[in-house]
Image (tube, rainbow, N blue to C red; front, side, top):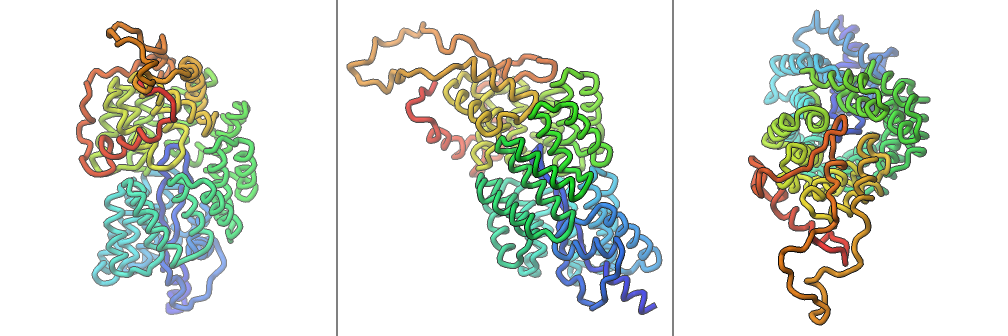
Length: 538
């Protein structure tokens, strides 16, 4: 029995868990490993998939999905006869959390919580069971419960500040809350405690969130060079593809995704990314095929929405409706990105008022990320509450990350409010960042920019020298431009036109917390300093 116990311990002391990337659209989901004392018992590593998952997790690398399944099976069999093994319960719980996040399998999350709570019953956090406590933080991140994740991780950091595996959890939690300064500081601490592919991959995400594109690219390249396993290599290459896609380079993105898929055939994030890139290059049938393949194994809500919008752009309305219907299931409610994706879906293809309620609830829970701010602003606009929408759109675009979707949403909202100078600038910015950012919205952005036309060469009257100023206005002059194309730019499914009116008046969005950095405060005031010199402000 002692020999069996020692061999089993090879895969006991590890926590594997993870978080979704918020952003609609677009993020790799995998769970870095936690426990640095994996081989403290000196047991030799055995061959086999469960051992491979354990070894990958020791360095924070993502495990191959078949190896992860083997690890779950291995721990379930062991715990059937050794129910007092708190460490194995923690391993099992974290593995369930990873499977749920990577495959969009929400049913795995309750199993993860049950296993982690059982671990804490066998040995409490006060008794030193930091593994299960941090595992609960990872599970909370995977569910999008950012404040709970922060609490768990900060408790572990207080107990052991030098435990490197705490900081990826903190980074994700802070990012979900919208505290990007704390996320960057946690990243700096992680870099002092640890190095390698996992750290570089995490740094790429943090730097991308701050708008530091060159740094993010260098970090992702470093992660790919340091990767020690095929899943880790594929994850880093997919991240490079995402970064190339976000800056409007579909050919480069396609090359990176293709390399990732040669390393790990069927890699979910790479397949979804390749679908976007192929659609941008006009290869829509191939793109639709990629989406079908990835949705068979990893039906994450962001993939479902992207596939639906591609099919709608191709005129395949029946297929689009079938995909949109999948987003109405309860299964998505537990995902890290689920509420943002559902909010965007309802805003554009369903009930905008329902989208507002859903996203306001998220905001009230303290989910202040730029992704939630953007989605809430867009939902308010689509619900004919453009005046309330603008502070949230400003919040999303002023955090740092360069997002074509965020810029487009803000431009349409400003257009609806007849702020034509800022609208022209942000709509054009969306197309400069990535002219292919959406198969549905990018064409509308081009139409809106064309309708707005070039800015006037004349200075606004208030800026002209007194000798050049004309007679005082009588209040009967017509506003320019002659027509407002907001409805075309912001229309949703089936071309439904909305003007983004201001029926709710000038009041700020109800429930928006009055704290620094929140819509309606200093962030909104800074927008004036970003105006293009010489461009008229309505």
